[in-house]
Length: 253
Ligand SMILES: Nc1ncnc2c1ncn2[C@@H]1O[C@H](COP(=O)(O)OP(=O)(O)OP(=O)(O)O)[C@@H](O)[C@H]1O
Image (tube, rainbow, N blue to C red; front, side):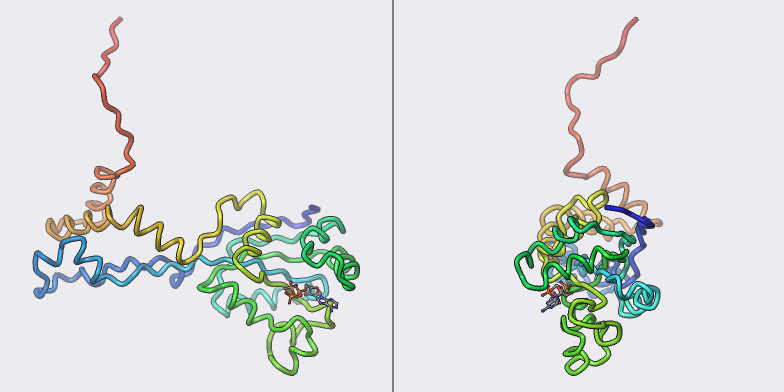
């Protein structure tokens, strides 16, 4: 891939994308909370489920809209997306056909490949709650003429020129997002894209049990610096802590 202006931004997540600690229900020392409430199983039912918005999608600004790239990026940000990574690339015809391989054999395939490899494009990994659907809604229908009628104001209405030169692209599903992000950012994305459900399962299995125990102890102890105390407690009680057993070996000369 001929990378003209390789710019990868590991953006900080905006506050709305940060994991909610879900601690508000146990902070403040409410007098109505008794010892029973500190039991992990009871705390779990009192706490709202963790809200972590990790869905990602691949967005492309196609060649015909690159002169409006800054404007489109502004719209992306104003619509609450976080730009995780971005780069400007110039695809070869082979790379463009690989990217759009699902359309191989269709009438428009040759012109699509020629168009997508004709000039640089802007590729973005966007994150937001339900990012795939939200971005598809923002870009609108494939055909800009139809978009003008049915979704006025969408990106393809505003920037699209015709059915091929329709300004922007968005992944269709989790699977296509994962494939397309790997395709464009193969160096930096290695882990599978976590779905909201997968994140919930991961947290409830790997993190919540230990964290809830730690929070229970924290509420009982009420230390002066609860964050440092909890951090130390988690290190001491990490279930994945290496278990170095056996006798201590003292080196002798
Ligand atoms: N009938 C057509 N004639 C010309 N070009 C087309 C036609 N249908 C699709 N294309 C081009 O192929 C691209 C991929 O088509 P697809 O059906 O996947 O549309 P899409 O999912 O709305 O678009 P994209 O995948 O780019 O987000 C379109 O964005 C457009 O550039």
